[in-house]
Every structure is written in C-alpha cells, then in structure tokens.
Length: 612
Image: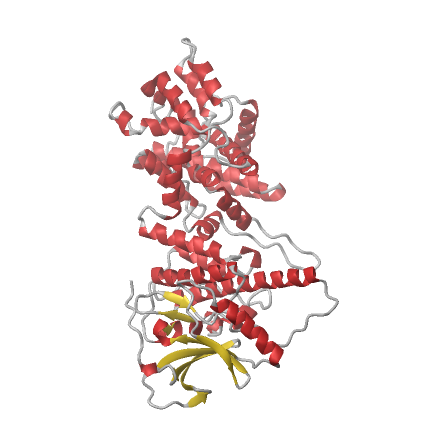
C-alpha cells in the first residue's frame, strides 16, 4: 500500500489572489469544460474549503433554481465514498457548492507530488469511486463531470467523490404546456441512464490515467477525451504495453474493455465494473475471496454439476445386475458428467487415497475407478448429486445442457483422433477436464456466462451506414472483463479442490490458441494435445459457419499435423464420427487412429498403458 502523505504547499499561500463573496480564493485546484474547483478560505467558519462551480454561468433564475434543486438532492446522499457537502448557494448569479478541506486533497494534487502507484492501489481507488457512484446512480443522480479535481483522497488512502451533479445543465429549460407527462419522464429516465453510463466510462479513463501515469490522448479533461472517442469521435484509448509498472493481463483486459472502441463492449453500469475489479483484487490477494472463493462455496452447497434426469434409475439398473461387467457400467456412467466428476473427486478424496495402487500414476479410467470404490461407491456418489437442473432457471438449464453436449462432442472427437493404443476413456476424460472451467461457469455463474458470451459475439455489419462487422472479445479477455479472472482458473480451482495431481492438471490445461504445438515427448503430452485439438475443432464448428468453419478446421489440422500426424480430412471424419456417437448414445470403438507423422524421426505410435 502506498503512503498517503498529503501535499501542503497549496495551503500556505499568504495572501488571497481573488475573492468570491465572503470566500478568499487561494488556488485553482482544477478545471474542465464542465466544472472548476478552488481552494478557498471561509473567514466566517474559520476553515479552508474547496469550492466547485459550473464553468458556464446559468442564463437566468430558472436555470439557477434547477441547478440548486439537483445539487440539493445530491447533497442529501450519505455514503462513505461521497464527500459531504458543507454548503451550496449562489454568489453574484453564480451557483457554487463547498466541501471542507479536511476531507482530503484532490487526486490531481496527490498525483503531482507522488511516484506512480501500484496497479492494486489504482484499482482500490477506482473501486471507492465506483462504490460512491453506484450509490448515487441508484438514487437517480449522476456526477456528470468526473475529473481528477473532483476526487478526494485522505491520509488513510480512502477516496471520495465530490461535486456530485455540479456540472448539471445550466441553460433554462421550459416544459411545454401540452407535453405528455409520460414522454417527458421517459426522456428524463433515458437521459439519466446515459449520464450514469458516461460516468462509468469516465471511471475507466480515470483507471487508465492511474495505471499509465499519463492523461489519455494527452488530454487532462476526461470529458473532452470522451468526445474524441467513438461514437462521437474516432480516437481509441487502450493501455500501452510500456507502463511505469507492469499491468497484469486480467487487469489490462478490464481496463481496455472500459474504453473499448465498441460501445456495446463497454461496462454499462458502475456495479458491473466494480464486480470485475473486485474479482481481480480478490484473485490477486489469494485469500479465498472473489469468484474463486465464491466457486468453492457453491461447490459445497450445490455441488459441481447437477445429475442428468433419471440418473438414479440408470445407476440402479446397471449396478443391480451381478453379471454386469465393470467396463459396461463405466460406459453407462461416462455420459453423465456430474457422476463422472463425482467419482473422480471421490477417488482423490482422503478416504480413498490410501487404496490407490502405488506406482501406476493417476487413475483416469472409470472402470478402474469403479473397481477401486466398488458398486456401492457408485450408488452413493449418484445419490449425493443434486437433481437437474439445480438452482438454474429454464433458460440457464438449456444453456448448461448445450455446453454439456458440446463437451461430450469434444470428448468423442478426441476419442476418434487418439492414436492407436491409447485408452478411449482416458482421452475422453481429459477432453472433459479441459472444459471444467466452462462447465463451472455455466452452472455456478450463469448470468456472468451470458455476459461473457455476449462480449465474445461479433457485431453485425450495417450496410446502411457502411460499418463492417466488428469482432468480439476473446474468451479469456471477456472472462477477465466480467469476472476478474479467467475461465481456466475456475477449472484449475475445482481440480485442485478435488485433489487432482500436477500430472492430471497439466493434461487438463488446454493448449493456448497462440502457443506453438511441439512434438509430444510423453504419453501425457499426446493425450493433452489430442484433447486440445478436439476441443479447438468443436469450438470452430460450434461458433463458425460455412467457409469460416472450413478455414478454421484446416488451420487446426495444419497446427497439429506435425505433433499428431493428422490432416483436415481426418479431422472432419473424427467430427462426423463423434456426432454420430453422440446422436446414437453409443461409445466410440476401442481401436485408435494410426499416426502417420509428417516425418519419421519420432515414433508417435508407441502405445500408452491402458490400465491407468
């Protein structure tokens, strides 16, 4: 945490340079197109105050009355992150409001006398601002001119927003006698929402200023920066790669979403931005809070996934026959991811760890798991699962079902792509585990999952205006921007919670799209790459259509050709076979694909043990 010594030079000016009624103006603290703030001495109260007034004088008494009415309402709001208004009034036809200097110095003053601050401190300060603004917005009040000279910081590092509503319209407005009341109220509500959204954009620019230690677009007036950004202007505001202090990628994604060139991708309200920044802070602190801590709490209350309808009856049927073989039970269980994950979790629990066969590595086949925990263990695991769809509503359950089907398709595709000698259940389970974060997102953060999906969707082209289609955010960036953490971390948190070892967690980490694909040097790496290729292929055919999907599949085949010896035809055949297996509900054949590497200096056909 940075030190918060307050600058004192501004308070030692011996003689006032100007007067404003009874106030002695000592220093201009800051000005923008909307407001100006002065440090002043109040001889009546015997204290220093900060005066804020609009830059444009109201045109008549009616405008002054409207300004005072808005400021009076704003001054009644009581929140720790809103500066307390000492007085408001009119002097020489010029409205003003005052705040006691004891509440802090302006952020502009503080930054002028200190070194660049750490990203964590910048986020804490902006969070304080957002807490105050969210409270004001929910009361129907917008700031209208958030600037460095309208944000205060005290010796404890607490931040408050002052001059709420001080930049309000100062032109006279007359309500037409014949105007419908409802239309005026609707227009006012729409204007209020637009002003609140503008405040949130200003917060994003404030965050940009704190992280980079320089004004966005080299313009200190945040309001003028907004005018130069889309949709009014064409200039883009993004964090530079070179900054005074390193900025973590998750925070960079949040900050860049704040100022996105596409309005639809920006944060639309203070609570949403506050949630993302708070999630990032909690994830940085690693104190069990934030989305990862919340996920662990929800695992204890609603489980990892709900069981598919009819699971108990199916389990009773397949485990009730003495002649039923373990592999036949496993085939029946594998289709239900909730039960599959519960068996995996049970096996890795403290009660079962001692029963594992030593020296054979992780157990990644259901038939081996079932043989270790017994048929009664399968029944018990099935009975502990929450019934479908758990706490989800109908739309959320449909979205989860679509994700489950997509993951199952990836698992079957991975089975079709696996080299000969590799167990189909192992590669299926690895492909599932590579989607663990997505599944947790859909079940435990259903609303946030929908936001992430919307951020990833491209905008539609507009032929009338000539605006081309614009891409959405990547899955990682969208997750950072909504949750403050990435989807991969959700899966890792659950895997660690289940007690999965480092070797399994490595295979369960999907190869990043931008990472180079190297020849596998172990069986574990073959499994990881096979599952990654299958997941990338399913993502492509699930999100793209026509020539785009074809081009994406060709790119995936080329990307994995050297490592797995596949071509685009084999990739297409694997997807076709996987769709058919998913449609029929039948397991994939035990025989794997024979690898024909691009060069023969490495033998990738060596079979892996199938009794893992």
